[in-house]
Length: 473
Image 1: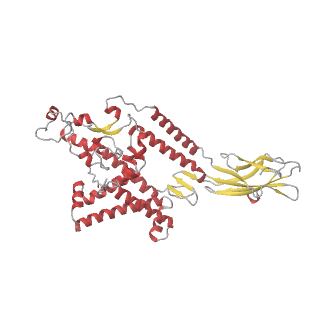
Image 2: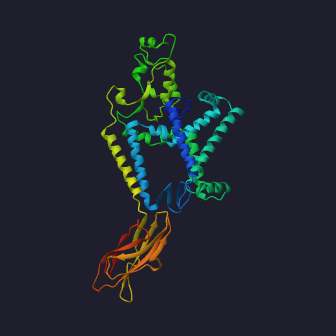
Image 3: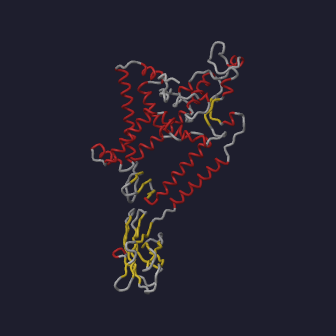
């Protein structure tokens, strides 16, 4: 085939101008956006009194390897909690998607929330849909330049504050803000802030629906979680099309009775549902991968139905089974399985957090050398005790041992010590034992860490191994 020079490798983006709409789903989206923004932007500034540690309610202290979440302090060895949180998030996503479709995308996704704010800024500066289209088609002049520049400056301001706020979670917020603007903040603070400023501006301001359509993998694998009972935003084809399809209101087709006599459906082909869609699809063409289930098309259609005095529901949340007149049930083996797995994961995480040991003890064998033969005939092994006080009070500790008759423990000045609150300490201890020359192999025993003056904390016995000459390396 001859190359005409007009073949394109991809379709150029058609800019979308979403129209504003009022309704119950739009109001719910505003409520979620306000709550999410309030939590995200204000949380770093919330103060929280502790006996020890920072007074910031939520702080991720990388240098100290501690994560402060109100009264909960997570340490580096509590990384499994993060795994648990991610597992719960994944199971919750699967569970909710199996029941209600892509409601996460429509109401709670960061991309959706920030795009909503950027669209609001665009409407306030440039006007609603028709005004924005007219502005883009008009030649460049002072009015257009001012409105476009104002929009992008406000976008950049929101993007910058988004990036800076994220950075504030990693250090004391009031101090870090001062350091940032005085040039004394760490390089990582500048790099993180500027990177998130750029990505927020590009994703929410420029890319918008392309992130949902082309970049987000969730749109691609959602079909694996959908079934005929999953709730989706759907257009009632039988009601909207009738026998003769949709038709605008004319003098001959003004009343509902006239339309039904002619076999025309309730859809008046106003296009309102398409104009409010943030991804630019026509929901009347059926379920599409670009649909994020924001339900703004439902608000748009309900507004038109209310103005005509007709019942709502031409576009509504329903399921494929219900749309076909079948019985629909949410209690299916798949959703029950997701729900049980979710409850199990939540229970396991709650149990792990609530049963966290106030004192953490670990023993590491010093293997270079594995043992030393002393001049008096004793064999010496060395161990490194890792002690961590996870409480907000100091703990007096004594280090002892049992299980190796005749052995002596040498902890030096650390045989009795005070471990500060929310602090860790590494203690080198040595165990000496005189054995017969014909004894070989290894012996098990226990190093005991005994809290003093604390009846609520019991003795912790950490298993250890004593190696003799001839032991397997």
